[in-house]
Length: 352
Image 1 (cartoon, rainbow, N blue to C red):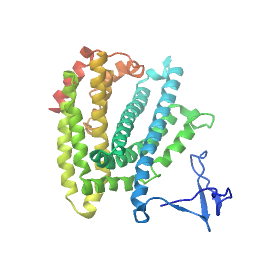
Image 2 (image 1 turned 60 degrees about the vertical axis):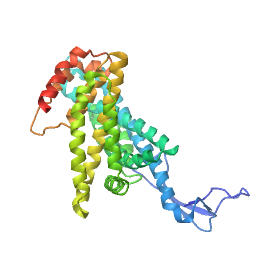
Image 3 (image 1 turned 90 degrees about the vertical axis):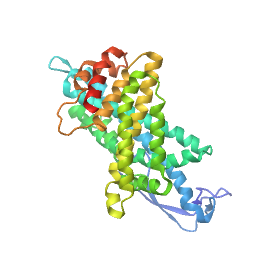
Image 4 (image 1 turned 180 degrees about the horizontal axis):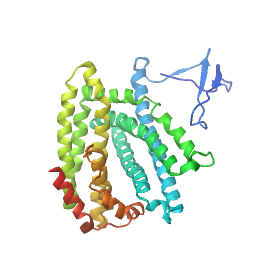
């Protein structure tokens, strides 16, 4: 690994040539180019034989920053959609009260809150790893590719949904949506494509047993939930975690192509399990501190959409409640325990 400075110690320009700036699809305000280093002075960073490992330390940081960036794009798209929908009248009422728009915007909302929880949690793991916690180092080794692999890919889809939510104006450069769509696409390419990241998840599991650390981390988090009502939902997730742990172990025992074929499915499933556990932990805090079950509803709907999905079912259990509570969810109003009790009971009955 080498550092090439723009100027030398005597103030003169170093010997390099900028061949061209690239005409990119997005992120045009952050230049990318091709440079020829011909006779440039470079400074060795660290050990010559350790360059790739040192670079991977940087890649961990960059992958996390990519996930943060994509989380911001998801959040901006959601805010554009809900603001537009509240101000646009259709068939005599705001567009935000139309059932299909409720579904479109809510999908953006729960992914925004889940990805925010994931990047904040991983940033804390990163901090602990930097401070010498070896266990957190290997946990970070699997978390960063999971975040980068899922969130950055998801931002591409959700930025498109936000564009469509605005209608024809979403395709016009007067609005931010075209920029969000363009900028979102590079996230799943920078610092490793989705396929590379999925293989990295497998590699971290095989070399460092990072999958076991992640499952233990999720289980410990769910075991720390205090609110009895939230804990009823966490039991469902615990059961899914246990089953997925067994399935993952079986896949990791496979050889070669058979194991690689399931890599993206494993990566996505691990993301959803971790995100759901973090949403439930947030729901526990909100219930205990504010007697508010708004975040529990978000966690339940996340579970239902990504971990309890039944492709044969047209209607989800939570759909009727979403139509009733959508405005309260968006505005972060209080949802009472007795209001959400029927939903929890229906979930328990359908799962156990």
